[in-house]
Amino acid sequence: MRFTKLLGFKLFLIILFVMAVGTLAFATFTIKWHSERYLRHKVRSVSHMSDVLNRSMHYSMLLNRREDIFQIVRTVGNEPDIEAVRIYNKKGNITFSSDVHEVGRSADLSDKACNACHLEGRRVANPNQSELTRIFDSPRGYRVLGMITPIRNQPSCATAECHAHPESQTVLGILDVIVPLEDLDAGLEELRRVQYTSAGAMVIIVTSLAGVFIWLMVNRPVRRLMLGTEEVRKGNLNYRIERPSKDEIGMLADSFNHMTDELKRARNELTEWNRTLEERVHQKTEELRRAQAHMIQIEKMASLGTLAATVAHELNNPLEGVLTYAKLLKRKLQKGDIAPEERAEILDELSIIADETARCGNIVKNLLLFSRQKISALSEVDLQTVIEQSVRLIEHHLRIHNIKLDLRVTDKPVPIMCDISQIEQALLAIEINAVEAMPEGGTLTIESAEFPQTDAVRVSISDTGAGIHDEDLPHIFEPFFTTKHDGKGTGLGLAVVYGIIERHGGSIEVQSQVHKGTTFSITLPRNIPQTGEDK
Image 1 (cartoon, rainbow, N blue to C red):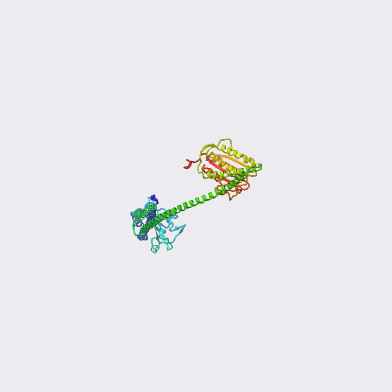
Image 2 (spheres, rainbow, N blue to C red):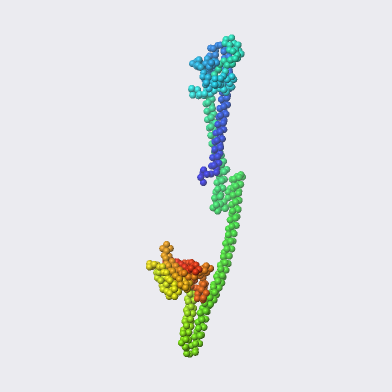
């Protein structure tokens, strides 16, 4: 199985994702919290420093000692942690600054730094500390924090003799202290680097430990279970899984071992049942074989009895006629002189005796043909010649019964391997049946066809006679079954035909409609399949 499809790998990815997202979020929150905390501390420090600076200049302002105020602003502004110190008058002009080049400049009241007190041209009475604080980028490339501290008109200023101000003017000027945030930003950058590095290290350590834990506690037990199920699938029910722990995985291993024990027991039971069933089937098969052999023997005896009774009945009728007419002739001949009339009668009776004797011979001959299971001699003959020979033998029957012959054969030879005498006898038997089915005349159609795909030929013999009833069709090839009720049929003709065609490896089909006619279709292979009996 691919590594990426393992359950342990998927769990490892989930833990890695959760740890990465959670640790990153925690580190980001911590950095943001510390940044705001350090900035608030810096703002409070600068605000405190601005208040101290404002109070330290208060006395000099009362005495209007500008040089003292300038020295204080310059001294404080040159401190390493202070970017600049400025004092704006009420008109927005810089009156004091740590940078002497800025003195006299005017402030843009629309600037963002002035919005704390001057909002859209209106003066704000009491701005809060957050509104007096601003952070912006210094031209030197780092951030700075600016703290604006209003210099308010206190009662001591309003009553001073040097430059009294009316009490209605609440703010006399602005003290602007700008502090660089370079050290703060450097510290925050270091904090950010340490936090993210620690977070990354924590993710790596925790996920590594989780990966080892998953490998030992999940992947290896699951792999053992997979190997166990594979062994069971192969049929090894003796495979056992060691219990790795007492947790759910251990319970699952115990359940697996118990399942294999139950499967092994069930398989042994099925094997035993199968062996017992085979023995019983063998016993029953042997009993059925003996019963079948017994039934076959009984059927043989019954068939033999039926055959003997039928043959005796069939032979008894013509033999009884022969015996009767023989006795009559004996009496007539014992009288001595025979009149011409009696001579003609004797000749008729002799004809009857000859016909009945021939009938007995036909019965015996058909029985011999029916019992014959081999083809006497094979030779390559032209099927068209066999058909024409059979037609010549029934020409007088066709003329007597006023039957029209429709022979549909080609001049091209159709060679086949067969016993010519048996095939001719089969065709002749079907043709005679067709003639007898048309006592009032009709049409006899004989047609041949070739099938190169199967290397076979077909002969179809059709009549327009009385046809065969549907209930008789399944029995027409059975021995001694006949639809002729005048005593002329023995019921062996079509049975003999069926045997001949079957021995030649062919097939015979029949289609019939009452009062419309019957069609027999014989299909024969060009070369007879050789069997053990034919060789």
